[in-house]
Image 1 (cartoon, rainbow over the protein chains, first blue to last red):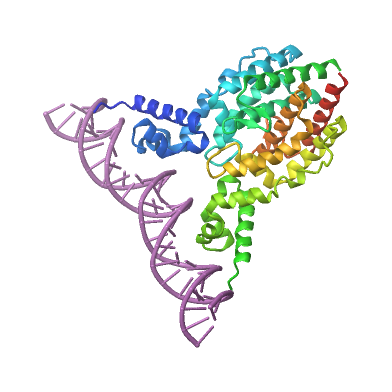
Image 2: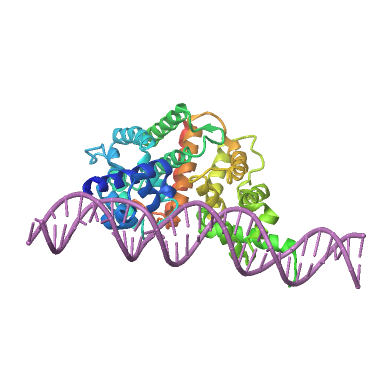
Length: 190
Length: 190
DNA sequence: AAAAAATGTGACCGATGAGTTACAAATTTA
DNA sequence: TAAATTTGTAACTCATCGGTCACATTTTTT
């Protein structure tokens, strides 16, 4: 049999990403990852230092929020910037399953294993939100609505509807986008 | 030993509530409930029909969203009603741990066991939201913000901060309330 | 009082979780 | 080429999970 540590590490890492994306935080376990990678689980301990080490490496690589860091010049924090972030950010959030699962993870546990993971991810979110760090009512409304966007995005994985709202319909998300944009305008006019 | 089925059922049910409130959905299991109730788990199967039956009974009793159903006359759906719901509803949400954990639960699974539970809870949420079921941008903005409120409430269990926002500070929640109220006003003026 | 039914317990089962150990095979070093 | 190191596997431990079983005791019925 051919032996290749680098390739094996890659297999393990990819298996982890795959499981996290598909099954979510609850599916992420040593046994599941080893099985998915087609490799002995001992190697996860030897090469990564177990689950904790694997998560740490994932966090440091930082390829989860990467695609959300698209705004280069955050110094202005203009209304146009906010609108741009709202539009692009929400779209990206809906498409990036990895980011979704990290956000979901933060809602269900925070222990010694996930500690470092969340520390890094939150610093990434912080960079994004640096575009709007003022203590204004627009900012609070904006934060609430982004939070709502996250909530409905996560909810849509298991629930097709929220009350009468169809979470599988593109029109719904367009309505949310429009409401977000309009809110920014109204707060700014006034 | 004294035998008393009614009392035993009550012990089991209370143990379930206690665990759900404290440990969340992940802590809810047959073994944990039996241990907390100080009773053989066989009785959970015999009296409730296992976890599925226990959840169904909980759902039908409906003492989770009860305190949110405080608005009697929903026919008007006025701005005042919306403001009232926003203020009281968010306060209630922050205090009702049981409701929080049900909402958290919906974010992490939806299987044969929880199916009925969510069906009932969602019909309850539906009654609340019936106050504002119009397809307006205010409604969409309102929904987003309520969703954000739920998100930050759930997040606050494991995270003290969201970026620079202190989720343990009452002032933060007052800011959210104010932003919500102001949004309702702005959309209505315009 | 005797029989029947209801209540309750603890042990047991198979599956699955994380983590460790012993050993085999391949690769590198000397 | 021989020894040492690295890479990899399979089997093992131990704990926990949901679920079932046989059995004892209490309560109710006849």
